[in-house]
Length: 416
Length: 88
Image (cartoon, each protein chain N blue to C red):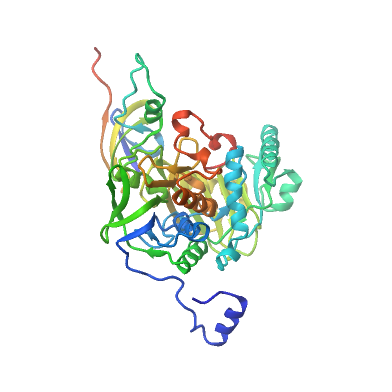
């Protein structure tokens, strides 16, 4: 496999780009593996990579029913951040941001993590008090945060609505300077290539249709390519986690919803940070190609249909037009939806599934992309050691009967 | 814009409706001891079916709860029916 570098790019440029090798193999599944990861999105591929890298377990298969990164990894708004409120969440999400900071070098694949900062604006005196509380909480948890006043926000976002009749005038905001955006496909492809290099079999178009249990332990899966056995299994299937869990006879505390996103026609550079305005639930950034990448809240209807509905589309885009009236006439290029796995406390589920031998990494809801390296690292730790990493222990399913919920949806006032 | 049919008001805009819960859950009998696991299952565990679902919805203008059967992939609605029972 070709190692990517400035030199190899230069060399291939002179040779007409004919010397590049394939980034990963497409092997036939073996009848048995040491470990199987269900789901070939970012989290699944990261899990396989860290199983190989951190735990030296390389006899691993990743089973993907479609194509790599074809679910939510390819359907998000690419925001990477850790502006959370509770210590457990801050530790978890900031671990993800820190892994992203070194990811391009680690994977030898440019994931284009651009730390352009993210601002959550405040729109009243009361909002400013909550913004100060949020800033303090983040700093206490060791995450970078700055409380901005109105002028500081407008300096960073000169486009913002300052009309005297503006519905929600800006009073200030919370900035996380280390937050930013990444290249979503590159994250999936980078993890796939790095995992494949270490011997992991990535098997696409292989749908899991059932789990094989023997003596109360999960020992493999039935798939569209036949049964495959494994010593240990992990599921990282996002919005379809309930489908996998139901094969194991488990009902998860998860409801699947569609989450929509939009990208506009390419514009000249107008926005060099990520801005979320909580009164509208709308946020946007600008991609390197110039398109505005726009997101918002969940659709109101539980759904597995990977497309959005019109009422939420209207809500999100009306929000954008109020945040930046100058963008009201910008045309949309594409619009899509992913199916996200929403838990009662808007925090993920990482831990044993309840069926021996099967571990879960799910429930990330609307925040899965930024957590890909962290989720993969922690699921790999569980699968390799059978025990929780300190970062994942609070996110075990046990928090539901004990009542130790980590209610981030309510705490940080951000769109989940 | 999708049209849902309220059993009381007829066909209306989807924005007038609110998803309440999955149908078929039974609240634990609180006259006896209820374990934390039973409460957690009742409160949080979901079937979250892909495909045909049975759900309780509310039509907000008339505030009536009703049963809706629909497909969670295609969004096709099969039926809506009242949850009212005759007074005892």
